[in-house]
Each structure stands twice: as structure tokens, then as C-alpha cells.
Image (cartoon, rainbow, N blue to C red; front, side):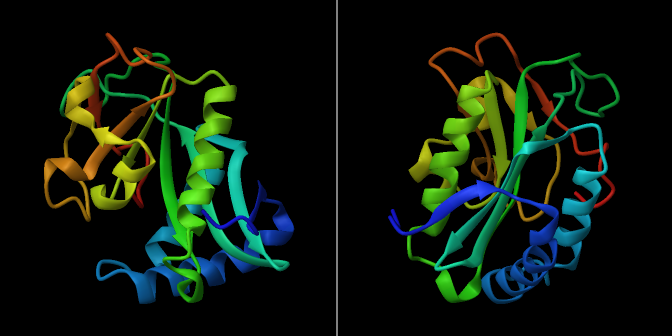
Length: 189
């Protein structure tokens, strides 16, 4: 973990830096997005009733924004098709996660998520969902979502079931929750 990184809540002053960061991170770090759809998702989440400003963070190193990530409320669907949601299962979605292309593989992503997960736990949420590279997210405690009775319905870049993951905030906190991950509340997801 990078000890020099500061993790703090984002502010409106960070928005321009966050946009630049996301564009570089996704253009240079992935083969599935140029980052414009990710920026649209961030803006959509910020304007939704699911947005939790206290769980939207930046990572700084030497005064420069080098990472961004956010958690938002995420209702699980009781059906594969969506539309029928648990009133409040106490779940948050981690998305998106971006690290500046010049700072990849330096422990910044792990430092960001460790602090973010700790904050989600402090706020009393039961669990976190994330879709992405299981080789990375498994290192910070995520497991395949189906182990918790939470099932994927679609998704990009999800290429296999291990790409949809969950994490309990306390042992057994996802017990009896179950449901489906359906992104129909977001156009850009």
C-alpha cells in the first residue's frame, strides 16, 4: 500500500481533475472504454437519489489527484428482469474506480479501496458490489457474488461470473439478502 497517498472526500473543485483522470485511466488502462462513458456514469450517479457524497473519494499524492472512486446505494432486484427492488438491502455499489495512468501498480488502488471499504463499514452498510477484474478485487476482500446469493444479469466488461463480486462489511451481514444485479436505474452503466 502506498503510504504517501491521502484519501479524502471529493469536492466540486476536484471535478475537472477527476474528468481528466478518468479519461487517461480508462484510455490507457483498459481495452473496453475510452472513459467518456465512465464520466457520464459518474455524472449520472451524482444526480441520482443513490448518490452518497460522503462516499465519493479522491486520492492525492504530492497535491495531485491520482485516483477517484465512489460508492452509491444499490438496490438489488428480486427478479432477473429488474423493476422489483428490495426497499433497502443496505448494499452499496463500488463504481467506478480510476487510478491515473502514470500511477498504476503503485498500491494506490488498494489504498483507496481499503479506506473506502472501512468507511462503508463505519456507515453501517451490509455489503458492497463491484464488477471488474477479480484478480484485483479479490485482493481487497471481494468474492464472487453468487457465493452470497447475489447474481449478475448483464454487464460489460464482465466476461465471466467471477467478474461480479460482493463483500460483506461484517461476517454474515449479507446472510439472507440475495437478489440480482440489474443496472436499469442508470443509462450509462
